[in-house]
Length: 170
Ligand SMILES: Cc1cc2nc3c(=O)[nH]c(=O)nc-3n(C[C@H](O)[C@H](O)[C@H](O)COP(=O)(O)O)c2cc1C
Image (tube, rainbow, N blue to C red; front, side, top):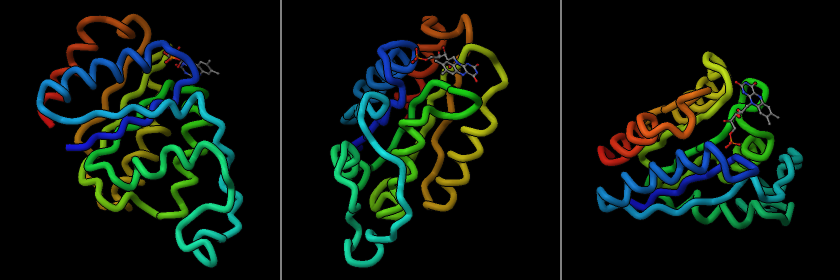
């Protein structure tokens, strides 16, 4: 499978370690993994102008880094969202990218999705997981897994191994 991973962290830290472990497992199972550093991109929020659904025919009127990730989102067989928890949800950069997908509604090809979340504290995942599962249900995409990591779990071999093993099962 062609797997596109969207990393919402603005820095190389716990999320990147989770993505790396995911890549190792998925590649060991023969999949192709491409990571997109959404957290470091300049992606503005959707303006709700409806250009995409009228004259634009699926293209967004805003020209920014969203253009770098949309083709991957359209082409992937599986999409993975990876993000730190910032104030009980994914990062603002990640949120902007998710909402800009409004121009195509949902990914055309993806059959599967997964969510990787890291945080300082436990029990802070309700908003991000609810958004993710609702969106994937709406898009008709199977949620293959949601893995969370907090506090001392972050960067631990046990957690990274859990992610590798999960990715090998895809
Ligand atoms: C702006 C900001 C907001 C955060 N909000 C939360 C939060 O609401 N709950 C929590 O448990 N951790 C919170 N954290 C901690 C991060 O989720 C945690 O350190 C995470 O592992 C960082 O991932 P990274 O190393 O990939 O950036 C916050 C960190 C930042 C910088």
